[in-house]
Image (cartoon, rainbow, N blue to C red; front, side, top):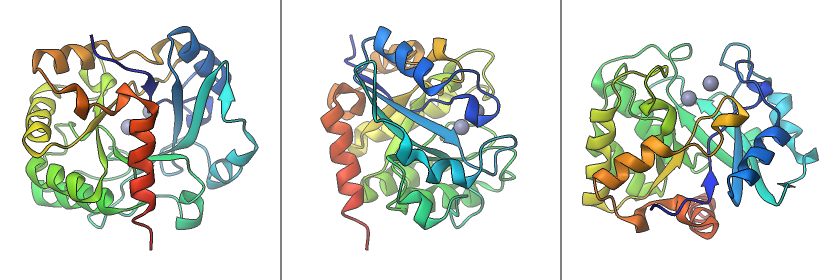
Length: 243
Ligand SMILES: [Zn+2]
Ligand SMILES: [Zn+2]
């Protein structure tokens, strides 16, 4: 069994199309025995999500609930080939954890080269810790280039449970996930599993991701979810890249 003590990708009511609160998500994480929960609301360019001021005021929220450590941050939208995202540098500096992802309402899929550059430039950003669901077939990418950039810049690549679920918004992601995971083994690049929960009942749900990793005999030492320290080391190494 894969050791997994965290969920690094969850949404609450604030995201506009999710249905639980921070405390409901934290209680669910506690029930599942998680040590750490990241709350990563969609950034402002996602229709119906919260504005920048929401992220700027996260300092008022306790970082513990129900014996679970909380990290509060954002799932940023990658907006262009330069890897531009939709919160300012000042706001990003206040995030405990930042994911950056490609989303249909926020960036029109381009050529394989264009999509790859958008991802690689996000991966290079010292304020971005995780590249979210790079497996979306609507955005074909060069996984070798992304995995190499992830290695060089110490950014985590996400294996997203929602992507693997039948009926999820991203279809047929498995071939891309397999390709990415095999390259992660080749280059020794760590990954992180995130549920992408939009309800408290989905917090910590990583079953399909675990099954895929087990099937591929993916090495446990490359799965950051095994320990909070492993995640914190990644975050610290990214911090050291800030100029
Ligand atoms: Zn969402
Ligand atoms: Zn997303």
